[in-house]
Structures are given as C-alpha cells and as structure tokens.
Amino acid sequence: MIRLENVSKTYGSGAHAIQALKHVDLHVPKGSIHGVIGLSGAGKSTLIRCVNLLERPTTGSVQVDGEELTRLSGPSLNQARHQIGMIFQHFNLLSSRSVYDNVALPLELAGMSKSAIQERVLPLLDLTGLADKADKFPAELSGGQKQRVAIARALSSRPKVLLCDEATSALDPQTTGSILELLKEINQQLGLTILLITHEMEVVKTICDRVGLISDGELVEEADVGDFFTAPQTQLGREFLNDFLELEPPGALVERLEAEPSVNTHPVVRLAFGGDAVATPLVSRLARECGVDVSILQAKVESIQDRTLGLMIAELIGNSHDTRAALNYLEAHDLKVEVLGHVQRDA
Ligand SMILES: Nc1ncnc2c1ncn2[C@@H]1O[C@H](COP(=O)(O)OP(=O)(O)OP(=O)(O)O)[C@@H](O)[C@H]1O
Image (cartoon, rainbow, N blue to C red; front, side, top):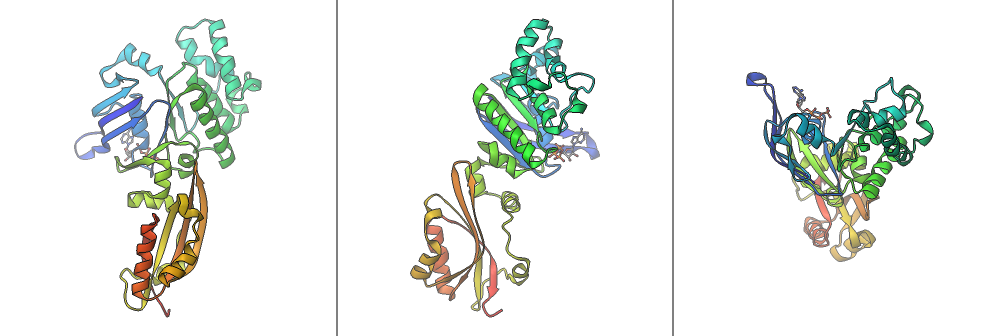
C-alpha cells in the first residue's frame, strides 16, 4: 500500500546541507500497522512527511496504493492526498471550531452538502467515542479527546492510509493506551493501513506488526515486532530494547566487568528466549548437563503480542571449559546469548 524506493531528502544546500534521509526503502502492506522508531533527529518526521509529500523527497519514489506521488502536483496531488489521513503529536485542531465542525472541515472544503457531511461525521464521532462531545470546543477537551477528534477528522475523507506522527507522545500512558486501542480497532474494522513514527517501544509493542529502526537518516533494521523484541540485529536496536526492558546489569557489577576472559573469570550473560525455551527449566539443566552454577541477577517474562519472551542477566559460574560448554548449550537451544563481559571469580 505504501512503497518508498531509494528515498533521500536533503534540507538546504552547500555547506549547510543536512541529509535527513538516505536511500530509504520501505514497504507497508495493505491493512498492516508499521512503526518506525528512532532517536530524536534521526529523520522520523521527514520520513513520514515524505509519504504524503508534505516534504518532497530530493530523490526517490513514493507510491501509495500504486500511484506514484512524486509525479503529481497541484490538484492531482491534493486529490491523491485524500487517500492519506494524518494525525500529529499536537493534534492541530482549529480552536474556533467545535468538535463536529473540526471533523467536518475536510468535507466542507471538498464541497460536500450539509446532509452528506452529517451522514459522514456522526458515525465517525460514534466510532471515536465523541458522540456526546460534538458541540464542545478543543479547549474544553482532554489531550486524548483532542486526538480522537483529530483521528475522526483524518478518517472523514475515507483514506486508505493513516499516517501518525508521534500521535501519542503528548499523552499520559493510560490515554496513550486508549488511543492505541482505537487505532487498532480502526485498522481492523476499516482495513486501514497505518504508518506511525514514534520514539517509544511501548507503542511499537502494543500495536505494530512490523517495525523499522531509523538512525541518522538510514533505515538500519526492519523486522516483525516479535523478532525485533527478541533479537534486534543492530547495537541501536539492542539499546532501545534494553532501555525498554530496563534490563541492565547492576552498576556495581558493570564496574567489575572485563572485556576479555581469563582463567580466573566467569562470564556475565544476557539471555533472551522465546517459544518452548520459556517453559524449559534452564537453570537446573545448565547445572546438571554442563556442571555450571547460574547466579540470576535479573529476570523477567514479557508478552509481546502473541509471543512470550523470557529475559535474564546471569553469571555462569564454573571453570572456563564448563562455562564455554554452557554458552554452547544455550545457543544450541535457540537462546539469544550476549556475553556482557567477565568478572573475577574471587572478587
Ligand atoms: N525544515 C527543515 N530544514 C532543515 N533541516 C531540517 C528540517 N526538518 C528537519 N531537519 C533536520 O533533519 C534531520 C531529521 O529531522 P526529523 O525532524 O526528520 O527527525 P526526527 O527523528 O523526527 O526528530 P524528532 O523526534 O526530534 O522530531 C535533523 O537533523 C533536523 O534538524
């Protein structure tokens, strides 16, 4: 439904040029929810704004529902944009118009009759839980309610695609949850394709099917959400995941970590395991089969969509032969093993 090919965007020129996007390829299939996550300044907003040509890519192709948008301009681009709704972090409502009139605005601009507008707007107010707020003004609404108005407005032209630019970043966690639930409902009920950008892993975990990671204008990693949360492929992906899971070794231990093993050290590992491994009595098996004691420093089990993910930071205590065998054993049983370092045995 959305296809970006080799999209680059440079702001300015000469010595002041900023290359905000570099050769980005992105495909979002019809009916899916795709997230793009990245740090501040990575190029997320530029990327999403290139999809509806609010920013024109410097080079590359942007197709939405099979139509090449970069070839369009003027009225034909405006027409194509009706297929693409967008919501923003700060809602962008008109404060002088009521809820009803905000939602009706795109339809008024399209020249629809009052009765046709009413037929379109009232069901949207129902869908977004705003039926009793039609006559209120934005200043009388909470942040979550304002975003609901923005969603209803974005849906009024019956788009095929909804772009969400940090749509929950200004909201508290509970309201974020209810807005994400609404977006998921809309995705399922209307078959709407959703592309969202965010800096929050929670958002990705809650509603996305796939996720891309953007860094310094490049899409450096892309995966199904379950895979991304189990085994990110890049250092930045691992940092996002570890921050989200708050699974870092205790500070006192970090200070003692040595990069290289020696005869008197044992490894400290971060283990991630999914599927059958979650239900396996790993610790006792390591002790029995490899002769290694396991000291668990941190552990948690997370549900990521329909998958269960176990995470653990542990010291593997034994002689170097046995601890190496234990690492091999873990890897052979489909655990993701990251050796964080080595600590002196007698420290
Ligand atoms: N209109 C502009 N003119 C010049 N530079 C810009 C413009 N918009 C963005 N940039 C630059 O492009 C780069 C990417 O910015 P962008 O806003 O796309 O990142 P972001 O990941 O959305 O960041 P944030 O999460 O902080 O909004 C940054 O270096 C930014 O300063």
